[in-house]
Length: 116
Image (cartoon, rainbow, N blue to C red; front, side):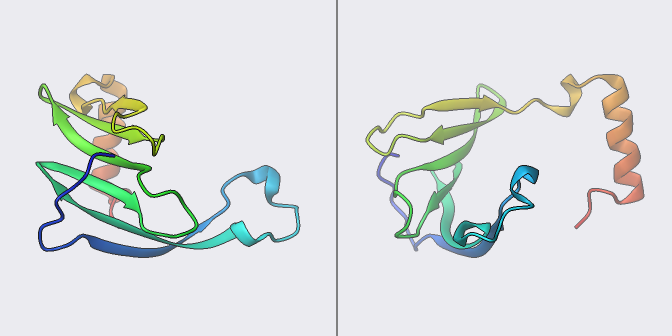
């Protein structure tokens, strides 16, 4: 990813990730089944970025969340040798979803299903 001016410094995340593939559920535990990782995130020129901050992973492989031409999108930087994103993923606005999806989403919001 392009060089960033962190200003006051990035925010750090220390978390644990677990294997999500059900095919691996019956196998013996492996070191990556419950991995402690460090990431950093912050605001960069009106974008939200998340990058790895862990010596086990390549720095420069991260994601940016931004508004482009009025639409929310995610830019994925999978190639640490390039300053250009390898993937651009548009995030569909709820207003573009089917009416049945919008209704189901609204019902779930009322029931608190999406609350943490």
